[in-house]
Figure 1 (cartoon, rainbow, N blue to C red):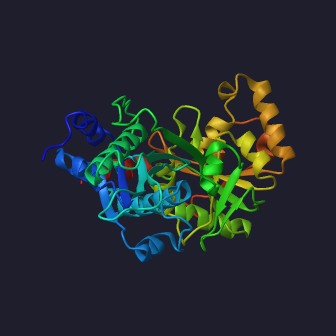
Figure 2 (figure 1 turned 180 degrees about the horizontal axis):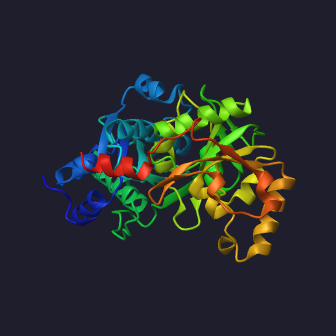
Length: 389
């Protein structure tokens, strides 16, 4: 038996897409899995697939016994569990320097024709879970129109179409449906704190070492902002010195948006967060400018390097000196300051004392001496070294 001719080009595109997924099945859809495996490249797409025929197996996945095994709610919950599993597997095998890719959880739950007459509706639901939302496709089949293989075929077509759409592939291949059979689409936004932050429903998200996630939490003390790609000993040492100097725990901040690079995809955010898990307090925000950060974290001290401080007092980055002073006034009004660590710049170790700035704003900057902190290490150098391994 070969892959259905209409399915092969779609599956080839799925395997060519930079997407990885875990599949959870309950009742049907395994033909679709066979189609995926029958086309070369499935190992680039599929991380794991599990068929949960026993109710106890499905309940084990969900953590409870569902009211109905074949429902939109159950399919979406299965897909969410599948994506969590996919992220775990992906992070475990991903090399540090590799870019993050979209991770999906896919589920298929169905009740179709068997060797006995079923009283209920023959029905299938396929769901796909992204980081911030999910889509479920529900289909009621006309009983008696097809045998079991025929119903399995249609449900598997629906599965492949759902995966293709989730991978950004335009799939217009028709399903083998009767005119009275209609696919219902159900879209649901994820309610996780990270999803809310990415959508802009939360301003900040603080993640504590014990795993607690708090939206819009009031913070105090030193904040070390960066891309942390990767987190390295220089970051950690700087945070420790800042905490000791200011007598308050240091917090790492990852802005998920960048004026030049846009918003990080959820999978990349999750990858970077793994570096801090169970070790340090981390806050995520959607702002990149320190004037905006001051509004989010009033009273906090921003820990920056010499190169960042140099840009902070350069009028050209604001469009003129007046706008630079206006921004600094806002930062002062928020009760924020900058702790400046020295860095190697143009071959020389430079500190705050090397920066020319107006006397009216110098009180906003605190020097961190070379004796207290010097680490000649950069994330770029680490990434380049890792890519050569």
